[in-house]
Every structure is written in C-alpha cells, then in structure tokens.
Length: 314
Ligand code: UD2
Image 1 (spheres, rainbow, N blue to C red):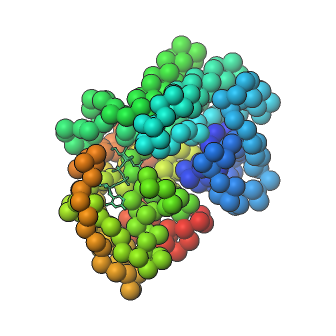
Image 2 (cartoon, rainbow, N blue to C red):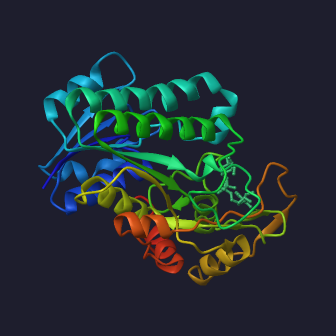
C-alpha cells in the first residue's frame, strides 16, 4: 500500500479520488485551501484514520516541499487548480499563477523529495475547438483559453521534469466530468449538475440551441478510479491519456435519461445557442486502456441515478 498526496483534496474530483484511494487501502495526505473546494466533500474521508488533511495554499513559499518531505508519498495526484475556463479568461494572471506556477511547484517538490510519480489533472480543453473527432492524444492541441493553455503548459512541465529527473508523470485529459458533489450554483458549472439541480427543484432545464450538441460525459467515479490506477499501478511509463468514455451524448438524450428518473419532470425549454459553444466533443479512450488498463464502466443511467439519489454523497 502507498501513501499518496492529493492536492485539491476537497474539490469535486479530489474528494472522490481520496475516497477511492482510502477504500483501496492507501494512506492519503489531502491538501486544500478551500478556494473552491468544500469541507463537506471530505466528510467520508475524514472518518478514515488513514486520511490526514492539511489546509493551506501550496503556491505560497515552501509549504508543499515541507509537506512532501515530511509525509514521503510514493505519488502526488495534483488536482488543485483554478477550475473555471471563464475565470481564466477574466483573470489570466491568476490562472497562470495557480495553474502553471502551481504545477512547477509540484514538479519541483517531486524532484527534490524523490517522489516516484505525479498524476496531473489535465483537460480536453488542451485540444480547443477540434475539427476532427474523436480526439486522440495525437490530435492537434490548440487551446482557445488561458485555462487550456495552462493545462497544456503544465503537461510539458511535468513530462520534462519526469524525463530529466527520473519519475513518472501521468497527464489525465478529463472530458466532461459529472457526478455527486459537483456544484450546480455557478453559471459555469457543468450542464449535468445544472440540469439535475433544476429537475430536483421542479424547474425546467434550459437548453441552449437545439439540444443536438454532444459531449463525452464521464462519471466522477470513473475519473477517480483512473486517478487511483495511474497513481498506484506498478511499472507505468510517463504519458498523456484521455479520460473519457468514447461515447457521444446529446443534450436531448441527456434530458430524456434524466426525465426517465423524475416522474414529474417538466419538459426542457429551448433558448438561443451560445456563440462560444463548441458543437461536439468526443474522446478516444484507447490510450488509457493500453497504457494503464483503465476503461470507464459507469453508464450514463447509473451515473445520473447516483447523482440524483445523493448529490452531495459518494
Ligand atoms: C466547457 C467549459 C466552458 C468552455 C467550453 C470550451 C465548463 C463547465 N465549461 O464547456 O467554460 O470553456 O468547455 O470547450 O468547464 N448548456 C445548456 N444549458 C445549461 C448549461 C449548459 O444547454 O443550463 C449547454 C452548453 O451551452 C453546452 C453544453 O450544455 O452546449 C455543455 O456545456 P458545459 O458547460 O457543461 O460543457 P462545455 O464542454 O460546453
């Protein structure tokens, strides 16, 4: 069993990753400054004696280095980030500090303390508005936001460090992640958490456009499992992999599944399409399968049911 340090432990993906690491018998050191993470997300992890939580801003001073030196993790899962694409456009400087400088600090802490592996929360945003689908890791990367650019730069920083200093870096390009604990309140929240929240409170979901746009929606449970495997499976080489299902789902189909689970759910209303929207996004999941044996296995029905049953729970 390993000790794993998780940055951004109180976040949506971070807290599920901690829960699954603990369930698999690993020790976890969780770090978060609650900028966007929430204490309540760690309710389950906090009950486990193998979980230790440290509150703090890892981009300040030598805090991360000291924590890594003291806790001697075999792996770091680096999920702490400025998570909103819109916020990166409004505040590119902050995006640079949290999402690029932050990664450099993690890479250096790994090098100085001989950490064997770093797993990084990258994003399909590195591809930008792709012309050819499905997206493979060999597809062209053309970010169209400071957020996407920072994720791509972070991949390069970690892969370069890993090659030069002899550790393994795994960059996980998450597609559209959904599930319990995703905050529906922000206007930039993922569409599934917004729709689920509307239906739960008896409101009609609003679809921008004709509803035929598609996304590759992946359950946070699958994403957390991909993180655990990438951090703890023996003998992995460095690399980049899409974390996706390989299945395209339209918003109309999504609504159909959601309404199937809410007897009295109102029909959606259609509004003007957003000019900034991309029409389709779809990933090829082969690399994660070939390189570390990960394949998504939570169906959209099951993933949505889990989210609707207990939006704040595991
Ligand atoms: C992600 C980013 C977005 C932008 C985009 C670039 C998030 C949450 N969103 O958007 O900021 O960078 O990638 O590719 O990180 N929709 C509705 N009704 C709603 C909410 C959304 O119809 O109430 C539509 C939305 O217009 C889009 C689809 O649902 O067509 C998916 O939206 P999303 O924000 O969940 O994800 P995405 O990939 O468009």
